[in-house]
Image (cartoon, rainbow over all chains, first blue to last red; front, side, top):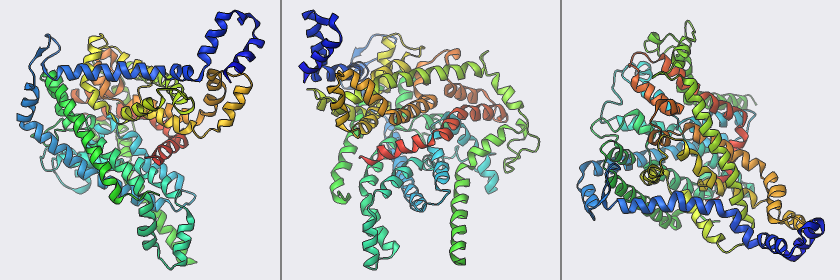
Length: 310
Length: 280
């Protein structure tokens, strides 16, 4: 095959007749070399922007380091300090509460609205777009500012409900402001549910109808089981994303009041960029990576029990 | 028949009511930005402004620290466009190699793509900051643009691979018989045929970079380098809690480009979300 293509090019380009040009061309044209050449950007990028930073940060996580002065090796001291830090435990608790509260609600909304919109009408495309819009805009600073003003004491929510509650200033409600913001962005999960609902063969529903099953029964016996792989995928992705909230938390409440919205990544950011404990923050990054990896692993372990693979 | 019609109307009424509730905050922000700044909060439950004015936009555009929002918008456009261009140069090429060429590292690299997809940027926040700091990249746009040229977004590679693997193999074989090298198969066959997926990737990439807050927060120190997202946050911190007109105006304006992309390219967006969700 290689020889053939080389020959072809030779006949088109008689100047390339010198043996050297010939072999070089053939070399770059072999599938194996072409594969490596085309994948080269990613290989270089992976080394330069993942491997090198991660390894240097692993080194710094064992150092006392604040960027300005050279790092000093302190062994496991950073990790010991982290496990003694009460805010570390608080931030874990806040982050997990956030993910555990927001993800199931988000997926329930996504599923419910997808079920409503699966029925195609002339307006369905428009409805889909409207429900999806918050997911597109939701990660912006503009929406965070909007949320902050909506839930302020003289904000929209209090005006409409006729209350005067400091939603963001109260330790009992502050986290909920952020949870509502996350649930509001259920649109992308909804689109994923919609497209996998359309993949379910209609023969299944016809057979169910012939057997006398109603629509509720069809939902629990056909739609839901057939959707479990998609639900699983969404659950994993959303849960991981839930553990990583940063921007919205930093803009809306910045961990306040009394650390009740101190997300893990926010705490890590503050350790590094506010208090100059870069070595400690590097160690926190590694702990986060281990937590996320372990959690993904556990979720995949439960997969066999409830996900229906067809 | 009548009952069926009633049922239809009821269905649409419920769906519309819920949709209105969903986008009400956004509409409220846009409407509020057209109100006189001092009246925004005591007329909060009144959606339509009594005396619509563009005063907030004029005031907001002036920005702060001698820098207008024109600078912030241009900065953001630059970062978003260069980053997206980098993604478009690199990601399809890598996806082509991984989905259609047979070479020794292929399986290993695909595994690494999946790992980078799952590896969140928050985990890389400190490591990359230290690395870019030692390269002298702080207060430049390089941390936000250069990595894009090396296909660092595993998600985009994955999305493109999914699409490319649906292109029939016979086309490659035919092109090869016609004398195409593997590179011209990419340039003349695979790349043009992947246009829909490439459109999806560029939209995702542009929106992601336009909205990005974490990287500008970490790397941009001088006001005249700020992107819109960072400028808005600083603008909010500098604004007293009573004067929100200008802040809302600039917030609404910052969402305008994304909203326009959303309205015009909606099909590519929704298809992108759906096709990536299928595999899991």
